[in-house]
Length: 361
Image 1 (spheres, rainbow, N blue to C red):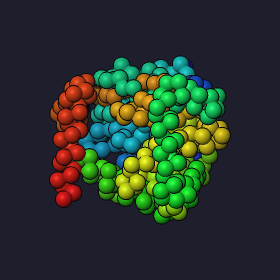
Image 2: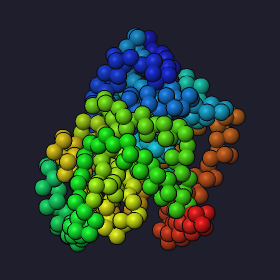
Image 3: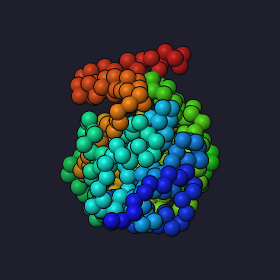
Image 4: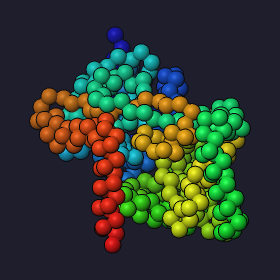
């Protein structure tokens, strides 16, 4: 029988060998190279979130799995980067069998919450309570092939967006796109626009959180080809009018923080930027753009298919698990109730937007 144990480390205690094994195990499992399940993302979160840990599963002193998480009060755990991570779970050797509650016990966790569990996470899937659609854009056959399909499925969308780009150039000034920008002013503008959008729609301003702003800065300035931030900027008349900070691996780009200058909103600069970015990403070897779960009309127009992601929690018996149920389950159940009723969800969005408008007066 192999000698099995779980070693709990801070993410920055993992060395190059562990990073290599982590990526090898992920490739063996056949999952997409989503950058949110890369050790670089875990390490960046660990630099801004002191409760971040990685459980290294070993057999005969050889790593056979990695489980990144964050630990809070009473041992309540959550997926690392919960709330901003679009792909969550454990990276395990194919065929490895585990009891998820025993894994949590080895980590000192009473619960582990996820909201974007990657498909194929058989260890945690039985604990999911909701399945969500995750729209993606396939670019493996190139941008021209993709736009050819788009002309068939959403002809008006593509035609109108390109017409708006021409109008933007005529009325504002030369339109220029930079795929991999190193422009600190554009990054600051992106944060400013996104913060205003959060407040306007009645949502919590993520960039008001020090750890979130710090995480974005770390990843935006990273240079690891396996996982790094990618800032793309659309300029008109020499000024940024839209920007997007994504997270990318060699083959997958996650659509993460898009924003635009509302002064130029009538030109749909965010959609112009997205089309330009898809063209550049396809030429750069990206095979899939993950648009992230959550409803948006433009995602329905642009997607080529949908993946499945899952929301739920593994809960161990005991005081910590009971505290999780009392503190989190009612709110999660309410969100699920609203999401399953489109008319009610629309009313909630309108109410939040009105509340944001009133706060902004």
